[in-house]
Length: 173
Image (cartoon, rainbow, N blue to C red):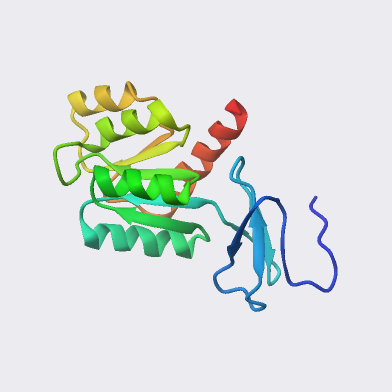
């Protein structure tokens, strides 16, 4: 059972990376670790504050995903629609997890992009796609994904897949 200090409605549970907590009544700074899934306690609730990069070429779907993730308490580290934007965002924001569409704008699809990312960084990738063809599933499987969500999806689909991806990452660390 977690014990919380008295008198401070918003405080960090983990240490290291500083960020502003959206919706915090004290508008204070909170500190999080990029090494593990962390939480902050604010206004009587424990909220998830993992930083997620959304890689989705459809701006409407990307905005819907962002809205849903924020509603679930996650921090959005950016949105990218292609390889160049995704790699730039990864190097700038150091996300804790990537939600990756399989089909992206440009020559590189999400599966090839995930392979490129995994060559340099250990960031969990959860795929989002409407494609379930055998060829795509085989290519996805070869990347060692942390999750796979089929469109259309619910908030629970997102939450469960993300939590399992972080659990898997923590157990491998």
